[in-house]
Image 1 (cartoon, rainbow, N blue to C red):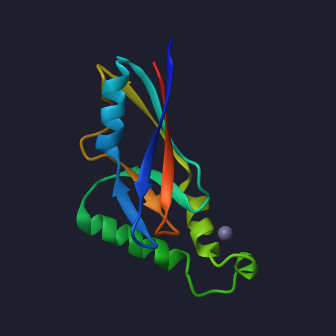
Image 2: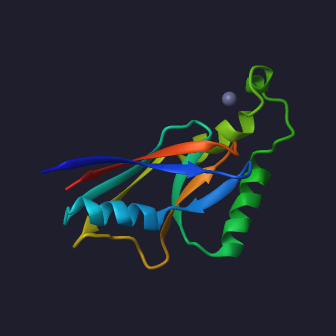
Image 3: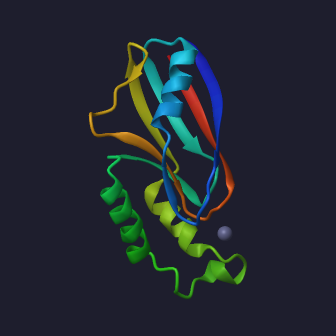
Length: 135
Ligand code: ZN
């Protein structure tokens, strides 16, 4: 068994942004030379998330609107008395900070309509996503 650690740098350009990072992760996986195992994608920031879903532009837009609707920006939050981003943290709480995907034959075993997304919830910022490959 081998463990490989890598990092992806992501520069976001707006407050909320949903970025497909599947191809970057695939490149790292192929370069690792590992044939089968588990790949973990983890964001080290409490105002971001990693999710898996379909990369369809209208759906991405629906997802952004849904997050804004269920967790409003214009509400009185305790955290906003020390930092003006409680809504970003709350959205991250709901979505989670990591995903694990099995891989076989040097390829992630994602479903046909599945992509891995980094979700920026308090951008624009420079972010780091940790990739751990165990195979
Ligand atoms: Zn904060």
